[in-house]
Image 1: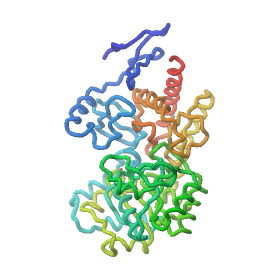
Image 2 (image 1 turned 180 degrees about the horizontal axis):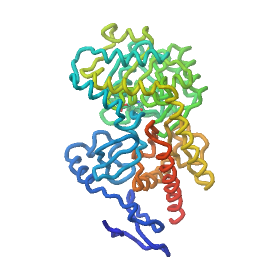
Image 3 (image 1 turned 90 degrees about the horizontal axis):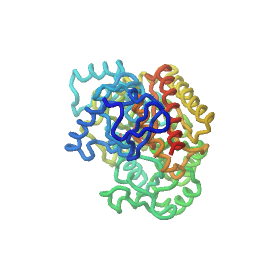
Image 4 (image 1 turned 45 degrees about the vertical axis):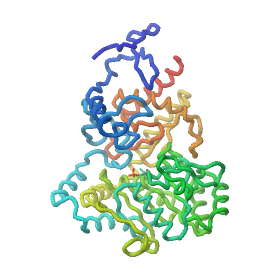
Length: 473
Ligand SMILES: *Cc1c(COP(=O)(O)O)cnc(C)c1O
């Protein structure tokens, strides 16, 4: 391992000059012992090179490719509790948690055991099993917002089906979604705002026909008059408004409860359905998700991520009255070869049973609040334009001075450069975040106080480094 790389530039009087290349920019680091911070990525790099021969961009989901933070992705060999280990044996505290599903951390023994016991008896039958009933019962008896549900295999599929249901139920076609909310990759959700408020959307991905995109209207979050105008203009053909009640896929754009209540009321008054996409917030900010947190009853809810305990599961649910429109009871078709897969149901059952234990969510939230408020005090003391937003056990690092960030527009794209420096510096210190500044972090029940204290110290050091860099430049 080289102490100094080819690009090292000695700077002023510091004893161990070193530099690193990050996102095409050379950073000089003189004030730390570089040996500690030189991570070996040989195996990951080799695996990535191979992967690029097999997959577009070397990955099976784009954000994994590290394009926004620079460098190449880590290939992960193993997860245990709140730690992951990469192909080179580097160990990281994991705040990505598979993008949210792993609320119990990696390889939770109870979940692993349930998966073993289930798969021993076969992995799929294409016929009903008692495990589907069991998971449904766990959910329905503890969730007053849905009476019936249908299991699918991903969040995308849940949203796609919920939209079809909304259209089938209302006999109308238009959908309103919000800029800054992500709902998976169904065609009708890959749409951005057209020119002017309340005009038809245009596709945000090649391959999505304009004919599909124009049935989606994209509005800014937290803007009541935009909603009023769109409803006035389109309500005759407006099937539903879909929102992430806790928008957590484009920063963490926490909405006011009053705004969500306003959406509930105006949709009800105008015979428009309200869909809460709770793929990320469901079972995360409480067992009943955002609907329970804000005590707002939407018409249709979608779930994913935690519901499958790390296996591919999604679900959508509603009142019996709305759900009876789904085939074979009704005329809205929706099915799946591996839907309700027993092994995946088993992982979901084991996970949700843990979530239902007393104080599960309150202790998770308490841990997160301590961690987040410590980081915020550190930032305030140093007058850094940096703030951590959080709800439940979700948090987001914003390089911003704003007190509230509630719309996609309020995020400064240039602030992502600072996140990228932070991300790479933390990686060197053994802390793993989702590789994009637009992604949130998650705390699991496996993150102990000691681990969080350790992470806190390292994150403070790295935040200071980010702002020192700016001062050096
Ligand atoms: C993750 C997510 C989706 C998509 O789920 P996949 O399982 O990735 O298809 C949809 N909506 C929200 C709110 C999500 O967070």
